[in-house]
Length: 437
Image (cartoon, rainbow, N blue to C red; front, side):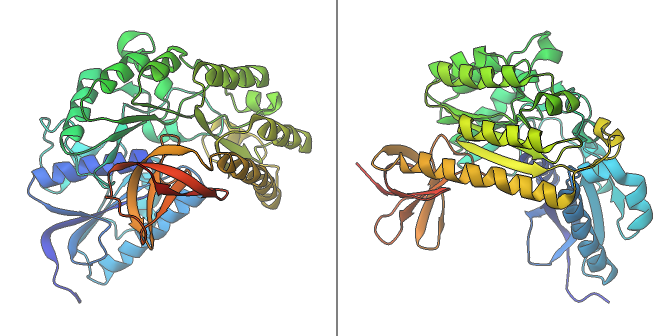
């Protein structure tokens, strides 16, 4: 028996996983709105008749979160709190037969490239004229811009090509149109995302054209910051660095997951790069763009990782002094190349190694932050939280990097605005400051 009166035309979209899923949900919601549906994102009102869950299937923890969320809403459907439950995204792409068998309360499962079919199941039309139109789930002043879909890289540990398919670049003109539409609505920062930004253009022009795209996006009036996420190191197009240095609205920031430094590990991971070339690339980036902030991501406990491999990574992290760093414990994913290997590093050792790396990075981050005391930075403010206005410099991406806090009792800043902030104190991952003239 239903416990609530449901709004028949109301759809609640739940997004799990990475920024690429956020983008996909925003496009889905834009299409639903154009089809006259009342659509919300992660509403807690429990008055929607339809729930769509956009899942993640990347590693064990993400898969478990997706399954738990599906089960939660499957129970809601069984008890009459919702009428229809739809599951889409990476987990659904990868495990559809198993999910259909195990969670029968779900009405339909769709993959990562099934948007027209999903809309049709709701009696909606896919509107081709809505290029770039979407409902932002981020604050209006920043937005993710997905420049390609899929991945052609052969990394042994990664299941993304199984879920997202082969690399497909979105044409430049379409991306520039999206950027103009976003700017017209008040977006000031574009965060470029893809499985691998550096592959952009290869399928369209037979050469890497990320630099050309950046120049065109940089020319869009109203876009103050352009940020680069997920750049693969092997074959990195160095002309991107020249463009970054030339254009003031391209942030001196690069997210480049390096994964490891041991030659044994890099070879087994099928990364197409060596320790020597990795170190050389990082130095080249820093030489070409002085002051750039580099974020990297590493893996602890990959099959066959010895204590020597780990110690080599620890020493390298200490020497490299990355501005931002994250580390995952290895997840043994079926149908990947590494699944043929023995997952021989115990979970507790994986966690210890990851914690050891983060201890080093925490010290580095504190030292780098303390060096900023007394300096003034241009800061974009994302939100007010408690007694603080919270913002970021060009060297920080939302959700994952350092934040700058300004006392809201002492000074007022409008969310979505830039302000010059003088740093007065520092912690490992936070900076405190005051607005300066």
